[in-house]
Length: 491
Image (tube, rainbow, N blue to C red; front, side, top):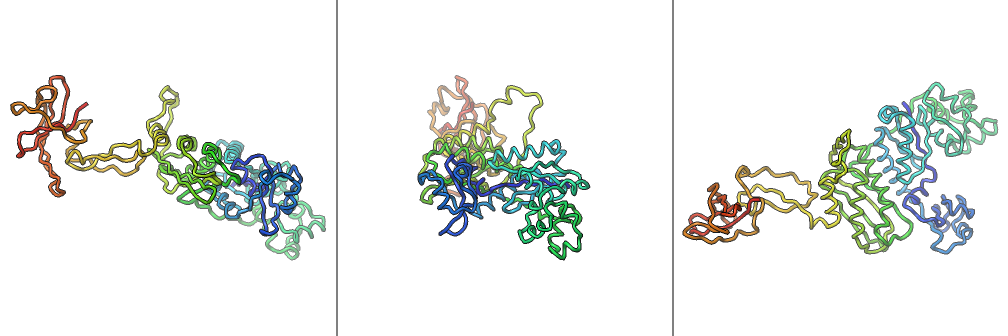
């Protein structure tokens, strides 16, 4: 097995910065409401001397900016947990073994994925690039055990030069020179060790086993054994959910809908990774806007066929947002997908052609629906009814309802254009007229139906043509006189 640890430094601040906040000084506060302290600060705040664990009031005095130039956001453990969960869902596309580590990051078993992605270097580069696209910063560590991978990732964050270790036999020597503080042990353990002159992991591994256990406990010795795989280190399996929901909070007001596209792109890339991991797509997804005053707007996006490309979903959202007037400035943005559908990736030709660059009909319909609205674009669905006027209905272009069985008369000739209501024809000597005398080409086809709903139909239908070559679908009601009616026109 080979593990990749992704250490996420200043995780609360990353959630703020990924929303695209401006360059003003910003801090994430924690602690009591009456006396909050700085949990982490962005670069603009650190430039004024703001450091972690500093009272927010002192940080505000150091920055010396007006109220709108210094942003203080309260830390939300719930939002951090949900964001890490969504990141684990995104990482599931690379390996089925993903383990979230609260307040630290992720660890992934990538041993079985190396061949698929072209080796270790390409896989790690692809994951880091994907994280950057999502707006996250991560330090990677690669080792044969989960704990050793985490130690290497922390070492990279501390500015140490470390390399990936893929050989279990070489692991003890690889981590021997790393500081003991990277193990994350409490001060009551590391302080006595440092007083004994033990400051590196290799020195700690060299201590007598029994004496170490008597002095510092069996749990710390087990940590060392797990790190070099003297004892097993099973990890809890992460199971992605059947639905997706992600949210980002801005920390400032967004008054124009097009400005939402940048943070929305990151949320949709997160959704795409989740769908790739599940081998699924979505045909309907929701865009949630949280406004000033706690009001919300819910926009539902529909597609003709299941899709998971963030680029396509963003293009449809752009068509919708540029024509949306915000009810109030937006403070937070969310994306939700409640129903996953099977997705089949389309095969692409080895040799590109001109048709490859043309927009497909599904893409065109989705774009028209997003631009014009779902009430302006629809398709016709066939129904199992003998009366022609009841044999179809309008449905939304993105409707995913199953198609009904074909009616028994589907083998009979039917016109492409069916009149909204039958039109009476002139009759001369018992023969119907429509731009001239009609000659019969086919028929009669008798349709007798509807006696159960009070709208009975007793008709004999014919295909007829006039001297100009126009072909019509006409009928007369038998037992009700010689009247003839035009009901449809053939193309």
